[in-house]
Length: 337
Ligand code: ADE
Ligand code: ZN
Image 1 (cartoon, rainbow, N blue to C red):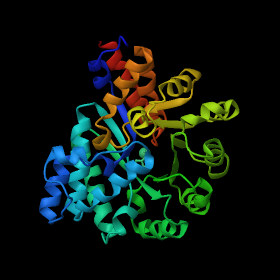
Image 2 (cartoon, protein in one colour):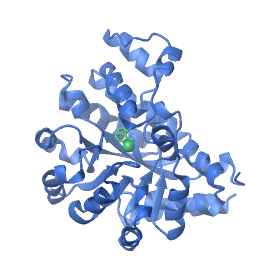
Image 3 (cartoon, rainbow, N blue to C red):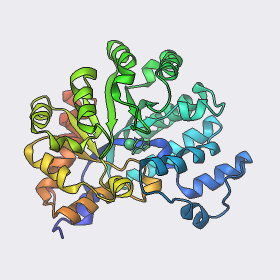
Image 4 (tube, rainbow, N blue to C red):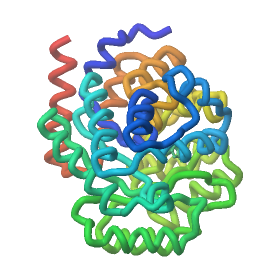
C-alpha cells in the first residue's frame, strides 16, 4: 500500500522516455486500420484482439507485436497512431516525450522509410499544440543483421534533423550490443544521442550492460535493472548520471516480476531511474498506471514519485535551461497541493 494518491501521480508533470510507438497500437485503432487497408488480421472485435494477447516472455510478446503492425500502411496511419498516444498521455500530464520507432518492422513489409518518418514526425509537430514536446528515437531491431541496421541508418540520413537519437530493441538473446558497435559509433559521431535496451533477466545480462556502458558509451539504458547484481557498475552509472528507463508493468508481463525492488534500490541509491510504459496498448498500462502500480507494490512515498518525475526530465535529451523549466513546473505542482 502507498499513501500517494492516483491523482497526485496522474497530475505531476512528467516525461516519457521509453515508449514504442508501435506498442501503443490500441485494439480499436488496429481494427479500424485493418478495415481501412483491407487487411485480415484474424480478429474482428476488440475482445478477440485482446484474447490474442497471450505472452509470458519477451519472445512470445514480440511474436504478437510484429504481425499486428501489418495494419500500418500509409503515412496517415503512422500519424494517427502517434497522435492517439499523445492525446492519451496528455491526460497523464506528460509534458515531453522521446518516442521509439522501428523502421525495419515496416520497410521489411514494403512500407517506404519516408512514409513512416513523415507520419510520425508530423505528429511530433502537432503535439506542440497539445502542450507536449515530442522527439523521435530510431531503433534498430537487434535480431536483424548489423548490415540491415546500417542500411536503415543510411536511409535515415536525409531525415537526420527529425531524429534525436538511436536505440536498440527486439530480441536480445544472441544479439549482444557489440553486434551494433560500428553503427552506434557512427551515430555518436554524427551527433545523435544513444540508448540501448538491456532487457530483464537476459543471458549475459551483466556483460551486455558492461558493454553498453564501457564500449558503446550510451547515455541511457532501457530497462537494465539487472545492474544491481554488480555494485561496481551501479557506482559507475551513479557517478556518470546514466539514466534508466524502467517499465514495471511490462516487466511483470515478460518476466512475472515487476522488478520493483531493483527499481527502488537504484532510485534510493541515487541512480537516475525513471518509470515508463514501454508498450502500453499491449500491457494495458500508460505511464501514470506504471507509476501507481510501482507505488502500490513498493510502498512509494510522495518524495519517491517526485524524484521519479524529476529524473524523467533530468535524463531527457534537452538543454539544462529547458530541464529547469520542467523541474520548476514540478516544484510548482508540489507546492500547490
Ligand atoms: N520492442 C517493443 N517492446 C520491447 C521490449 N520491451 N523489449 C525489446 N524490444 C521491444
Ligand atoms: Zn522497450
